[in-house]
Amino acid sequence: YMLRGEFRKALEQQQFELHYQPKISLTTGRITGMEALARWRHPEKGNISPAVFIPLAEESGFIQELGNWVIQTACRQVKEWRETEGGEIKVAVNVSVKQFIKQDVAAFVKATLEEMELPPDCLEIEITESVLSSHESVIQQAVNNLQKLGIKVLIDDFGTGYASMTYLKQFRADAIKIDQSFIRHLPNNQDDAAIVSALITLAQALDICIVAEGVETKAQLDFLREKKCCEVQGYYFSKPLPAAQMSKLLNRQF
Ligand code: G
Ligand code: G
Ligand code: NA
Image: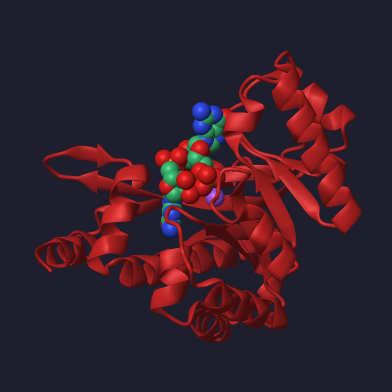
């Protein structure tokens, strides 16, 4: 539990920060939501990637405290955005499968929304799966509880997760996010083009939204638009930025 202690100290010393990256609707060209992405500014080691510290936080048990901090911070931010910029902006928070196993995420979300007097449509939950889990019924129950509260649930990294299709069958996600590895070589790579087209068709058949992440070029965007992808996210629009820099983008039309 050494590591957990260190994590705790880092959180107290405000070394963690959230950056935000917009998701854009391809029907309206407007920003529908902001994905909150955790950042760790370590005083000696510099910036540590979440790809590194999230698995460590999961192993040490710190993921619960970090996850709660992420939910509270993102909710506080969306409250400020809704009050100052108006609109229906949402934030999307990443919650790992490990976190669902450790705690009642839905209960924490409910309490946070009530405390901050926020409506459920201001928050989305992206389920990320960094480890193979055999706790599908726990996830299913948590997702049901979140959806009953009126919160949208997305399956992240769709296509690379261990249980993408199983999750899709077990609960009705409100949206899926195509992993950026499938977007990177569009539109020229025939296999990726076929996979992405099929995933879009799958989402349409299920009547759910599909989000493409890692969109970096106009050619990728054109492909996704032609295939009638629902939403897009990526460096082509904006990289993840601190909230203050993102505020200026909120009402932009792409
Ligand atoms: O932002 P970046 O690409 O460096 O993030 C790397 C990975 O870390 C992503 O797959 C993302 O889902 C994950 N991640 C970022 N922030 C959080 C967080 O707050 N909670 C969880 N569980 N994962 C996160
Ligand atoms: O949780 P998720 O798998 O959505 O993680 C998104 C990660 O991808 C974040 O670490 C973010 O910084 C990164 N990212 C977001 N947009 C792009 C992009 O256009 N290109 C690349 N290479 N990475 C991106
Ligand atoms: Na995500």
